Structure formats: C-alpha cells, structure tokens
Image (cartoon, rainbow, N blue to C red; front, top):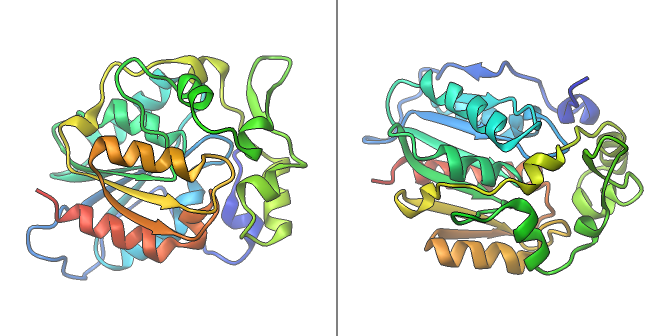
Length: 255
C-alpha cells in the first residue's frame, strides 16, 4: 500500500493528485503549472503541504506517483504528467526526485527546475555514484537491500536521520511503511542533464542527515542554481513548506 505522510500526521488534508488552479490571479508572466516529483521511501503525498499552498495561489499542481521500480519508469511517469500540462511548467524534485527531474526536465514545456534536498547528477552519474562520492551520512549508512534487492532505510534510524523535525509518531509511521527503491534505479546513470539548459533553483536543508548539506551545496554550485537554505531535515518539504513554495513561485517567473 502506498505510504501517506499526511494520513500518518493526521494534521494535513489530503488532496487529489492533479488539482486545478483556483481563481487567484498569478503574477504576470508566471508559469501556471507545477509538477512535483517525490523521492524514495515515501509517496507523492509528501508534497501535499506545498501543493496546497500553491493551489490556493492559483497554480495548477500535479503530484507524480513514482513507481520507484527504475529510473526509466519514474521518468516515464513524470513525462506523462508533463504531457498533460498546458503551457510553461516548473518541474520540482525532492531527494531521489532530483535524479528524475534531471532526466525528464528536457521537456520543452519545462521552464525551470527546482531541487529540494535533492540529488542532482550530471550526465553519466547515478544515485549510487553520487552517494559513494559524497560525505557519509547517518541516513545513507542506514540504507540496506532486502532479499529482493530493493532498498529501504533501517526503520530504527529513519526518524532521526530523515525526519527529525517531524513528530516522532509520524516519523516512526513513515519508517515502518516505507516504499522501497529498486537497486536498478539506484545504479542507473542519467543520460541527460536538463539543468544545463534550464533556470535552476535549489532548496538546501542545512540539518539534513540523509543527503549531506555539503553535497547539496556542491550540486547547487555546479548548476549555478539560485539557492535558498532552510534549517530543516530531509523532510524540509513538509516542515518548511511555505519556504519551499516561495522558491517554486520564484522559479515560475524565471525566463
């Protein structure tokens, strides 16, 4: 069963996957469409707090449901979401979702990319190569394969390493209902780096114990991304939803 961050928290209202924009008037020249791509181990509802903020402001928000079975499958799911957009679109990825948007973001509808506590590979790089090259973290060292080769984070480590600023019961629920990432996805290199040709933004989580802040800064620097730092864990997209939404709004105005 897909894992629901919002149901676990019992403090957010779940929304539908594609929510049409409301009557609010967007800034002149703004991209109207936002496509949000989730990371490994959780599902698309991890984006719901951000989606709710943007929807109320008039954006059309789509949450991609990654199968997490391969990079190609997740890219295909993202491209299917992009195909349904009418006009310029901001493509946003969290964590593993950064790998996906790097590959899928060459779509001509994509006007800007936003990475949130995300991996940002260059051509030929994979999640595995980036993880091996970057600083070791508590969360990274707790990722292990199951008997089928799929990857999850040790449930005992997950709360402190991934979601230390969420309520403990929420973090524990997430830890015990993780969606595994296939080892094939972990090893797959990207053959496109869309950030080379698109305006790029990066939200760095300075207390992240899964993807080291130093690695995030390296990704942002080589992409020449516009950077915003938040004092949050890897779950900053939930805890700092307002800040993340504000960065996405800036990206919607990028040319």
